[in-house]
Amino acid sequence: MSPHVPRAVTAQLSFEPADPLDAMAESFRLQVCDIAINAGDAAIFRDMPSGDQLASLMGGLLTGTLGVLFAFVEADERDALVDALVGFVPHARAQAESIMDGDNHG
Image (cartoon, rainbow, N blue to C red):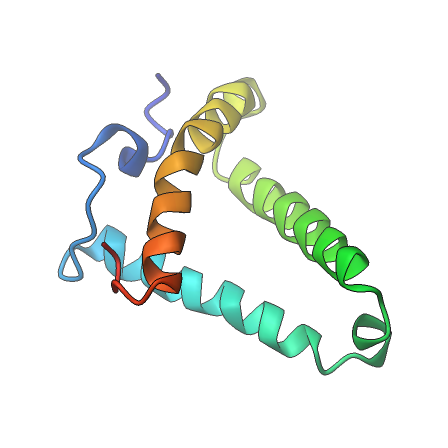
């Protein structure tokens, strides 16, 4: 695995607020939430059917996320990075569900 692949994918998958990695991840999570909240300020977004709202958020967030992540690795490391991202999805889902259920990061 590339040395640039996030350690969060290979390390124990728990949330530790004092860990700088987790502290920054929390900051980024909140910023992404702000993006979604602020989308409601745009009339074009508000006027879309909910399925189109979801599709536009998903497409924009994923494309933007991959573009930003690709800036941190060489072109030949992109596949490993995408594999790491896909591998992290179950953990991210569990974290998001825990937050949505009020469990505060499981």
